[in-house]
Image (tube, rainbow, N blue to C red):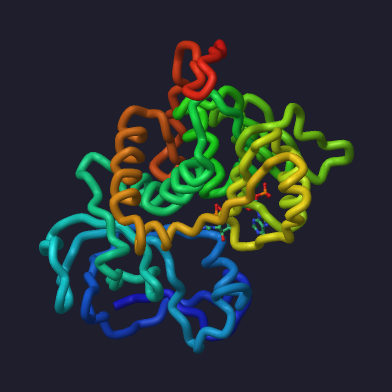
Length: 310
Ligand SMILES: NC(=O)c1ccc[n+]([C@@H]2O[C@H](COP(=O)([O-])OP(=O)(O)OC[C@H]3O[C@@H](n4cnc5c(N)ncnc54)[C@H](OP(=O)(O)O)[C@@H]3O)[C@@H](O)[C@H]2O)c1
């Protein structure tokens, strides 16, 4: 079968389509006939030999989210039948005609959810909703999303709007991305890196998909008692005194922990994401132009009872 691999590190030019034997599902694994694969920043880093992907044995077949139909199951797998449709992370060999996925990483995909939407929602959607939930977000709070035009960021902006944020600020690195995040429903757009860029009014929640140089300023954007969720793979230093002075918190979020230790939350979030997509409240570009619907009516804060007009 055909599988994309790289034999040296580099940009997209190092990716090759190789002919390799079809994989066999090992214990706890499911073999999928792949109908769609997601391309994400961690894969780009992996191909460059950066971050968690550094040091892989070459040639390497990169990891990625796959969607497809079950062809076979390995020993010990329960709950998956041949022909069922699932999506999840293949730890390697994702860009191929067939790929194996740990059964625990695979989510069933309803028939009315298109491949591209499924790929976005089992990964970026789960990270965005998991990060928002980790912040303890309540309806009526304000939310700032950094790297807002990215895979996770663009779902996070739509989720914050759909779940009743009083104000959603989308932060992006260039003016070229500003129009896209406005289209997703952001109330305000900040282009960081531009001279004199300001966050505006402090916010209750920051979902930081950028990290690094953006992390410090993003922490500064928090209102008193605000929470920043760091889900990016870049990180940044925390000064405990800065947290104390404003009663703010920094919370780390990694989706695999939810899969491994809070499976019921992961499953509930997945159902919520399918429902929001069906209702047109989360749109992805994977299956055509955005068809996103702005919620109507005022928002009432579940914490203070205050209301906002939309
Ligand atoms: N915690 C978890 O479970 C989890 C799961 C998946 C991903 N992640 C992390 O979440 C972050 C966002 O992931 P994603 O899949 O949304 O990525 P993505 O679709 O590639 O978007 C990444 C965004 O990050 C910004 N960015 C900053 N430095 C960049 C660089 N060197 N190259 C490209 N873009 C860069 C860009 O926005 P601007 O140009 O506007 O800044 C870009 O839109 C990554 O750090 C990833 O490692 C975490």
